[in-house]
Image (cartoon, rainbow, N blue to C red; front, side, top):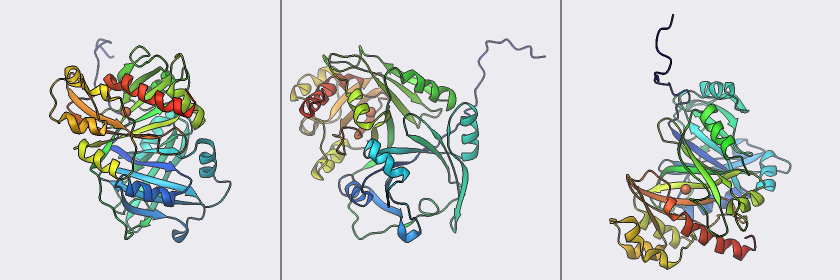
Length: 374
Ligand SMILES: [Fe+2]
């Protein structure tokens, strides 16, 4: 008989241990040109490819990497494919947020038995370099998580890919790892997906913002941040809130055709150098009014960086109890106002830049107004 008192908390085992983000697969209209863009503009390095030459008759994929960030860009090779339909519906967008795990079969079993909808039953793929096990589940919209177990694999990426080593190899720009990835979900769906990450994937909630935190005269949104056991995976989930005019989340949902990944935040150790390089290579950023910098140091206190380059580049600063962070957001990187990137440098802060939301949203609204979608 169990005589222990009922309310004593016991250490709960993490049923879904995750090592990190394995790769992010973006379905794009023209992977050949997108690969060039991510090399040239963002400094990603060519790693591997798959296409007609490797026996892939339906789709082509390019794998690019910068430190721990791995992107896969995929396009269809003919009409009527799943990738093609995804692009028609959503435009270029993130299909797969792949998670690096020690046991892809167990990850699939633990999540599907808790209610996840299966996307891919566990499959073993192998070549001369070893074996990889992958499995997958659906998350919000048409986005999926693929669990990748690669402890018995020594190849360049995955079986089926060949090394891609073109002459053109621009230098990297100091991007290090995926800091967080944000999902936009539909009206009143935030808590559904917060519960999904809690119950199905064992994540816990770090923070939440409501429409009082994140609203301007026009736009409003609510957000909760979910994180896995070791904190390596952070997924803020946004939903639109009622404002005087159309929320930026609503604009995303309209153009993406439903829920999806809104932004990928990538970390750097030197945001001034990284953003200077990005800007020189043609990446465009959201700008806040220069008045943002007038009382910045009163708001955030002492920082190590000079104010001038931050102001010149449009880099934002925010502080929490543990330190501060520097961040900046690109404009959407495809024709539809959907997916964009955030560049972030953390100096102790573990938060997400709440203090910048208002200034930022006003900048986004100016862009929305220019698109006629405010
Ligand atoms: Fe972010």
